Length: 293
Image 1 (cartoon, rainbow, N blue to C red):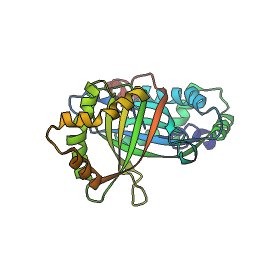
Image 2: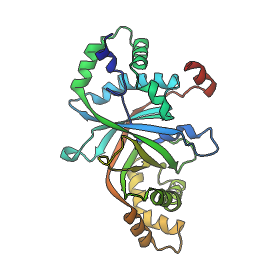
Image 3: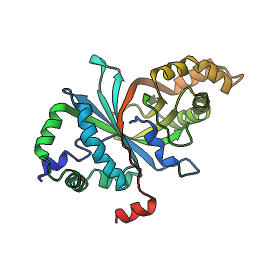
Image 4: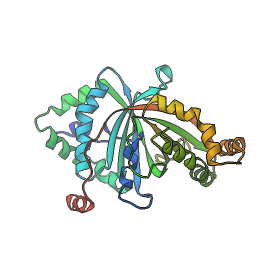
């Protein structure tokens, strides 16, 4: 198998990802065995443009088993693939989003290696014509890049399983990151927890963009609102002011929004619907350590 064939299964080339989810429940999966919120969970969100029909089919048939094997080997925590419903048309940057969740940045050494991709590909598809499959993929979808995020907080205490998510991209003013995170955690997280308790949402996630970085890259943070349906999303949005007033009685709600607007700009949002996800669990920690030796 030559290097170009291997690249088909190299996450950087094709199945790289945020997202994330998209970030849905997959991102919080690693929390369930920890009493405190984990500090070592990262996720990569990738952007794909559909060039012709068949993108979802390709990821269901190839992306899903490939990443499920990575999860079995302890390289990933979770994986999911999403269709971007809005924006669409000429305003659409990504037709699909792929989300990979992993523990610790050091995991990227193996996740992104050609050797890892080759071993998994040979194990799953020993008789597959890799060159032809790679050609078909490139004719079906175009990989447009990915970003890595650090999970910072979530409303749900454990894993959730929402069917759709709204990913909000935040551009925080220089020197105000700590103020922004503090407001999200102390003002808005309690609101989302109340929405979750009322059955109006499935989760809320806060994450910081860490790779790539530099002045050319905006949107320092994202928040992700997870729902079961558009109806649930509309219900949560319709009750937002009521929920804020219940959670922060006596507070000047307009002043809270003005303060947040002075710290960050919500540059844009994407609404994503889950197409497929991994259906396997990562191995126990002791099994993971022995597998990676």
